[in-house]
Length: 606
Image (cartoon, rainbow, N blue to C red; front, side):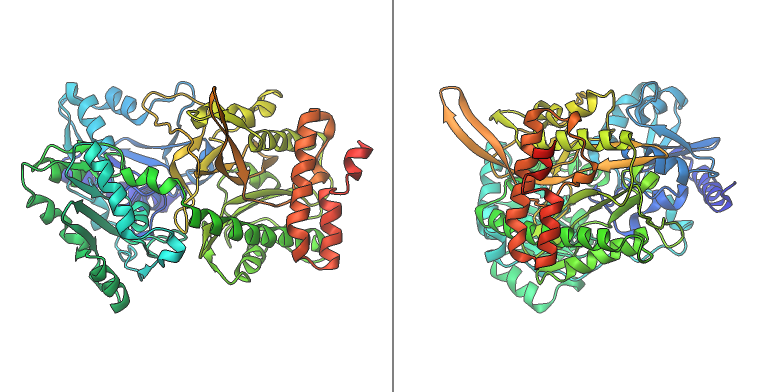
């Protein structure tokens, strides 16, 4: 069925392109800071093609349009693009060109590529400059063509800003600033332009609410030996925040004043900028005054290695969060088939359990609750117009998390609601085996996530299957649920950054299997890297688990596990029971004993 609304919007965009002399127009999923998740104001790509995923780039030309997205969203994108005339380009699939390759092949000599330079990273913009130079392609980056078309566009975000107490943050602004300045000196830079929102919040010890579930405020920062400048919408600062910033010697300038500030810099200065996150437009402004020092934000690694206060708070809050999810699983299994429960009401009930925790500030991302075939879409989100009713059969996958004064959580469990097939039982068991192998990893310092990923993926590969995403990502501290530079991913790609896993880094562990039209399985915990023994071979490391939620034994078939994997499972389930049971009533405790098989009956029987 044709989607006339999207087709009409694309027609209006092509008309605006023609008037502006633009042949190809590109719309990514980003705000002015290249954020992964964005405020509704920035959802231009979604407006013009209907795809709601958090990662994707739309390219429009007079004869057509294409959307590039990754494997997490193939099923969802195919459904949402239906009838729009937008073609789906499945990133990293065999025979599928990258956007750059597509433009190189299809753009004619001396044509113009257009985009809003504020929402394209400098790295991406510079790549197009370089790769399209032989065709003498012009780049027009000063226009947001949505402005004249999206007439009911949401307002620009301007939410309240709060100060994070140093007792919760673990380190003061001055201490963090000192670490940053040490890094700058090593990079031979005398200034630092910071544009990444979660890094800004971490450095200045403030939080905002300009992106749903992400406690960030629209801002920029500029640091030198003498000055700390925060560019932020002054209207969002109350007297308490102003007093804090003044006390810390932080100069406050208007958010929109950053361009003029950069234009006034000394040509002799050396400003460090991270081209992965700085916008192309802002980078161009800086480059007109200075030769930028193009390095990674020093704040990224500093932020990723959690300090002792953060780790202590995370351990406490992850236990509370695990208890909330476990109580939800008990409620769901007890009530399935006795009352109507939908994907939406189940998610609402889980949120209720979380909000009973005094430190709860909200969700860390919209809950992904997928029943049966819906769970095959990795980032599925039920809506009032489209949702499934849960029945006492099959699997229900719930990926969720909370924001707390002391942690950001991310956890997935796939829950058995009733009879399942032997195939599903096999798939569930190998996913659990992979998650447990990663949990028990031991390695020498110097490994990146690419060295470790196979531990989680091997049991899945052994049955000739795979999952089209990484195994893990870093998690912020009262910040974004996805954080770098650490990650777990097996695939080599030229230019793709990798980071050595350091003590104090937290990381998710979430293998899965997704079968279109049938089921999806994911089991996810969060872990923290810790130093182990150090000897003549080097510094050994291991993970400590933060998440303590039972694995559903109703879906486990031990014949698909090795003896070692079964031992890992028993150990984890026993620890879940030991950690959670003191906080449960007698009925819940009896259920958890059966659920975890912590008395060993399942393992003795099998």
